[in-house]
Amino acid sequence: MPPLVELAGVNKTFRRPGQAPIHALNDISLTMNEGETLALIGESGSGKSTLGRIILRLLEADSGTVRFEGTDLSALPDREMRYLRSRLQAVFQEPYESLDPRLSVGSIVAEPLRVHEPGLSQAELRERVLTCLEQVGLPPDAAGRKPGALSGGQQQRVGIARAIITRPQMIVLDEPTSSLDLSVRAHILELLAELQRELGLTYLFISHDIHTVEYVSSRIAVMYLGRIVETGTVREVFDDPRHPYTRALLSARLSTDPRESPPQLRLTGDIAAPTTSHHGCVLAGRCPLVTAECTAGPVRPRALTGDHEVACVRADETPDLLAPAVSR
Ligand SMILES: Nc1ncnc2c1ncn2[C@@H]1O[C@H](COP(=O)(O)OP(=O)(O)OP(=O)(O)O)[C@@H](O)[C@H]1O
Ligand SMILES: [Mg+2]
Image (tube, rainbow, N blue to C red; front, side, top):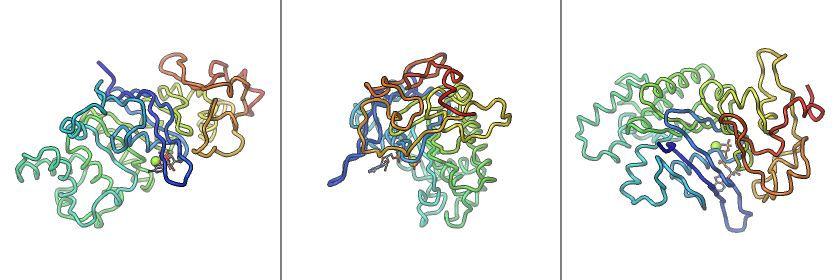
């Protein structure tokens, strides 16, 4: 069976008149398997949302292929593309901004169904809406209210209800809990986990929050400046990070046992502008482990053991051998 989603060599550059082009995605290859949660982490501007939007077909890649269940999406006729859109849904960071304040919650949740299953009667629509509200933990009378009358957590539940009503296979969750209070966050994460189990959903979970990611994901992809620099299972990436960027990112993470924390690695300087073209490794200018090989040519992800893939020429070296360059 092909992977649910497969990206190969995807590039995306934003061009605006009079401004330098922004290379948002560079040579991205990635697979997602049915039923998994793949977390996409990386600094602001690294291209996470752009990648999510390309998978959702809200944006067109400049080159490369995006396959869903083995089918190249760019080759699909409109009718099949519409069907496919119902199988792929999204939940965004700001629930209130993505909900039309003039409509009732019932109309908002029903809207994707009106588009994708236009043959449904009013009674059937109502039934599906009420079932969805119940699935996301909202009372039936929420259907008659306006989003402005709900709390942030309830609004995000409405966003989730709208995403699951077409019975999708996959949902792109773009920072779904980042704008919520800490206490509400945990409830929404529990709800997402429960829905995944019940409905067999696949999630692309985009997040800044390393702790959340560790809690909800099965695999991790780390992005830096429009590239995926490391992928692997949560344990491979969190317990044995091999890309210097991942190691620097995880250095900020608190370990419950300080004796187990890996050596700290600090990068120098600031993230380069996304308008820069890189001949070699994108991190070379900031990396304490840099060698001549790093700038000689493109550094592509390569496989280590298991599912672990790292785009670093020194990925095979153990952290202990690299110790002189880092500090404990
Ligand atoms: N529509 C657009 N037009 C021009 N540039 C864009 C557009 N969308 C994104 N960009 C640029 O592309 C780069 C990647 O942006 P993207 O939103 O994908 O990053 P991100 O990792 O999601 O960041 P954040 O964590 O802040 O959400 C950034 O430099 C951004 O400014
Ligand atoms: Mg984003």
